[in-house]
Length: 530
Image 1 (cartoon, one colour):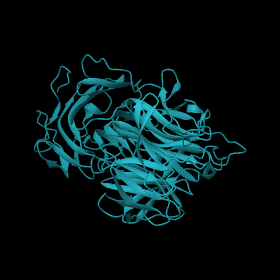
Image 2: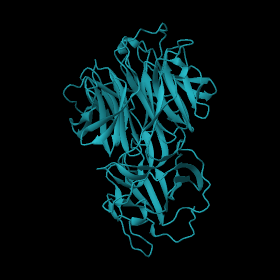
Image 3: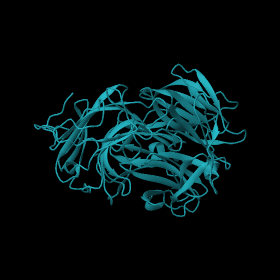
Image 4: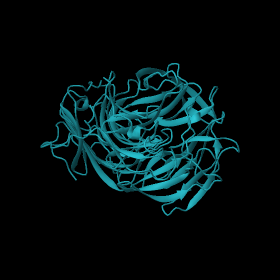
């Protein structure tokens, strides 16, 4: 595998035995918690290789970079950042990362999506209304799968069933992908082993102070997408009076399903064999599940806080915080586990043991639901005003938009679901059931999950666009339009780290060039929706 600039590399790190530069420039890296075994092995917790602050990559001139990598996320680690020049203090700089997001309320919204982005200190936000798929009242789930964005909804207007829709960006329309069963909502979507899975629910709209759906058929089942409008049955949750799949995620090569109204968490293999994981506490309703640094985490209501476990260990209490009655979402940002809660619209950071620290309030809101990392920054959706906030650092959040307008008969307006797709952040709401997109800083995304095994990634910056390559093929590019902030020389280049988390897997043969790639013929994916 190779990329072509017409020049010799200005840095070459084989990473076979150490982090030293094999080029004539001698820009050696400092390896932290790295094992070398014919490649650098990163542990997903504390591993990285810090290089000098290379001026050639500060945005003032073209550069390109390539590396080979292999993901190791089977044991509950996020893939994370491959290489970056990114400041956590200012949340700015560039990064090449693999994005997986779990615990986005009810969904694993992104799975192994390769990205090359440049985050600025003061982004310019542009919002777009993509309408209401099926004229439903709630976009329960958003999920990126096979280069498309899918939405699961509550109470489709035409038949009161839970449907899945796929976004056609060029036409600005939603394609009906059918209804898996006769329940009123598709509550969760997840990609697992290259297939799209859906969990169904009998949603009780009274919890949002809305009229109940006339459709009260139970859900509680998992289905696999077969294309078109076809779904095949996969499993029914083995709990009495099963009516709800409240959350789906992937952990230790299993599909994890959480029941929402009856209690129970279950791990499925590809053949449908089920391992019951129980649920923490006899009376605790569970709200969301996520993975972080080797553990499966679960958030509860009724002041239950957070628990975690592996497939082979029991649930372990991880604490809670004052004024926390429900845990709605999880996110990994800057290598730390965060949770969003009710009945304050607050984020909290896990400090280990049973301790959580304050990560800031989103205005005077009462609840945080949708949460997402977009291009080096963190965004959250809220109740009761249907707002979106951006994290500014030091426990400060900035109001960016109110996606649901006030209504005299509706008390709770929600931004429930989020996903990163085609270079932007997409958010689903209640009660209008709309999907909105946010575009700001340049982000080139490959909206297809990476397979197991070794890959080569390459990035190129020529002052006019960011370009992303995978296995010698151009997969995405996005216009820069002089929007990239220069990076100060106090910010080093780091291999194996990015805005979301450190890398889990192996990296080798990192090459840096002081020129853009020659003969670029990149697709325009990543710029859509702006």
